[in-house]
Image 1 (cartoon, helix red, strand yellow):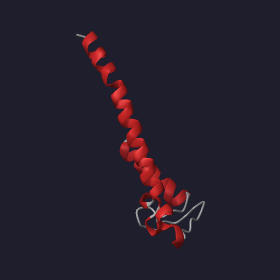
Image 2 (cartoon, rainbow, N blue to C red):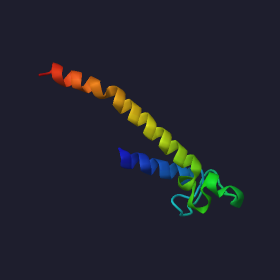
Image 3 (spheres, one colour):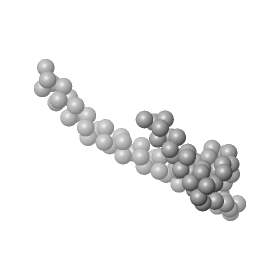
Image 4 (cartoon, rainbow, N blue to C red):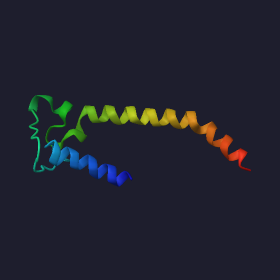
Length: 85
């Protein structure tokens, strides 16, 4: 599932949005993104969105959401396991 999500993400970035994927240029089919030199920290520059502050912010936020979700559901799994004994 993770591999499929990553492949879909790369396909959406490259051929659909026309953004560089992990530093490689791809042929844009729908949109063509041209990064500006002035905001490389924001758009990732030649590396693409994966090298931007936006991507870092999104990953940190998702990590926090998953950590909180695991903490909140930790006790629920213990109750379910104990009730099946």
